[in-house]
Length: 70
Image 1 (cartoon, rainbow, N blue to C red):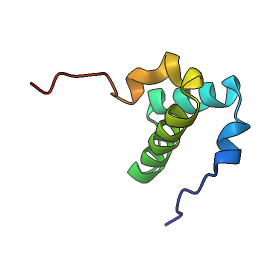
Image 2: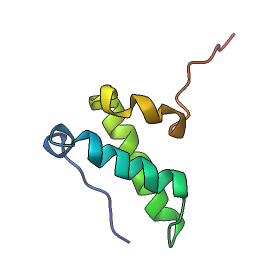
Image 3: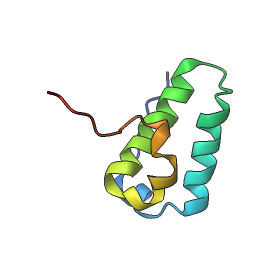
Image 4: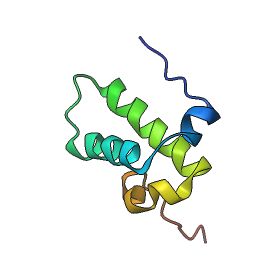
């Protein structure tokens, strides 16, 4: 099994188009196995924490909506 490894530099060089392609893959959910989709999800999540402006249109894919713990 291949391990996802992405550095801060990789994320820093990502473009809007790169994130759009990633989000499209996640939306289509047409992966040959569950791990490929999970890797893409983790990548989108890492981008969201480091460059949230790129992920803003796709935040619904991460289910990171604020919630009330009360």
